[in-house]
Length: 371
Ligand SMILES: *Cc1c(COP(=O)(O)O)cnc(C)c1O
Image (cartoon, rainbow, N blue to C red; front, side, top):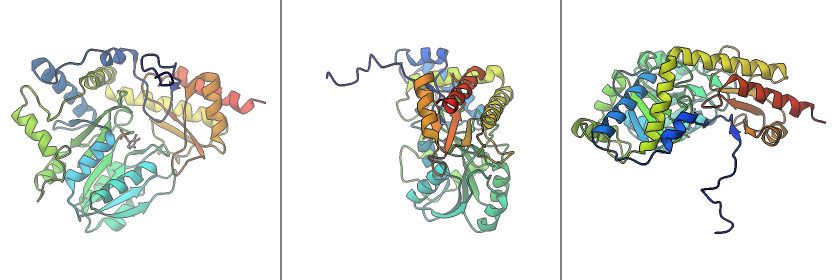
């Protein structure tokens, strides 16, 4: 095993300012290193239900959210699978890399997809959705597209969907926790997120929140989804029948749940609105600093996201290399449609601080002035 990586002696890894995941806050690391505990019984059930309550609150839901081992994408699969039936027709905004993932998931589930193209950097125009939604069953969209750093107007899109009688499912992986994103108040049917981005938690958990109208759609299905694990009814059954001691169908990654709980408590101790405002101001500082260095923001004015600051960059590779070598930190390059043409700074987790943003900006400046 001489040439193998020794998992007990990992090298000193670079600090993360990438577009996800974020690094854990020190206190949450302690939760991760706790011994594995049984995923049933009084203590666990209380811990789990408190965590679910915090997740539910951060997603702005009135009925308890689903907390599912797997990532956000597993929950995108679940939301789409539970709200639609094969053969139904949905419109999906192609906002970039994660808009395209929604298209792929919908097609994988046998849905017919009508694609609305969205130019990189622009917010989805709800009128474009309105033009095609008549007679369709759903609208799928990302809230914050991580590839471009654009926040999309999901409230208006949800209104367009509702007026047409179509279900609205939103990928909030890069928004929940970093933006106000409420399944109820924004009139969505389902909102999905992950533990490792705006919630500052460890990777490995996904969440789905349904509104009352989303719940009604799940109840009104004619057939069960073609999955046991991702059928929300499986999760409902354990919640209602085994709720007192084992309120979920599978073994829960207890350490991840505890670390997420710890992280969510930090958010609510600050207050969700204040927390989001902090992120907004940090993103603004980062964006303006990059602009001062000559990098044009990708998002058009007014739709800049809080979690990921994305700017056009002709030659990102030397900048990323310089930051890694000289500052021992990582930011992200582009992702289709900005691949090779952008730098993106992720603001989440332990490193989402003014000091770290200044370090990134200074590091980039020195990369630019390097002989
Ligand atoms: C990161 C990300 C995903 C994928 O989330 P996973 O937890 O890796 O499955 C999906 N959508 C958006 C907008 C993201 O930023």
